[in-house]
Amino acid sequence: MASPVRQGRAGRPGRGQAPSCIDVRAASPQASALLPVPLRELAGMLARMRERAEALCRAGRCPGCPSAVELAVAGDGAMAALNRRAMGLPGPTNVLSFPARPLGGRASLALSSETLVRESLLYGQPEAAHLARLLAHGMGHVCGFDHGPAMDAFAELLEAAGLAYLAEAAAGELAAEKSAEKPAEKAAAQGEAAGEEEGEQEGEEVAAEHAGRHA
Image 1 (cartoon, rainbow, N blue to C red):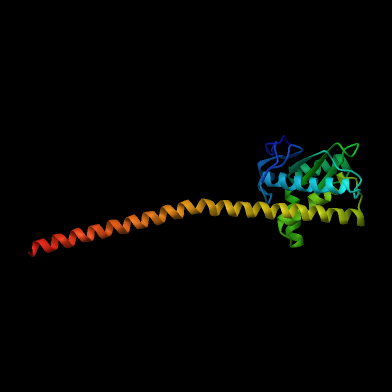
Image 2: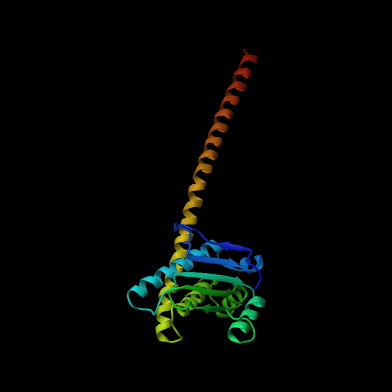
């Protein structure tokens, strides 16, 4: 896989930020460009999923939760190479999971953004929703689940947490845009008022000049 060229990571949690236990990297600008969300939001979504998994783990509802998660976003070529090397299978896949040993350590995920786009079209599903589903599935494996009803139920909870994060991020961006629009609207209104006042003054001057000529 090519050396990462971009990453999404933050040291201190906050709105739109991921804690330092989450590290998201893109293997190429092309791989990043195909994602339906920016890398920083992708990191935040993955962080929310890990937080949910940690809470479920404390409640005894999953085998274990990784202390940190690395996510590599790649294209189909790099993913096919990794799939062949790690799983012995030909061709690309959507997501690969590499649990920590033991489970509480640092886990890794790999995601093909090309496969993500292709499957979204195939299934008729929004790309962001399919992204959440794939990451939740990958997180299920790094939390110690194998395929089955228990993993499906666990992944659904993480998927819901990830989608909730994206909804909150979108609402925050909308609020920020509206806040930025208010000063511009105020300045425009002030400009219009100043223009009207200037026009009225010019009209009065013309009227006075006209009246003087006929005096």
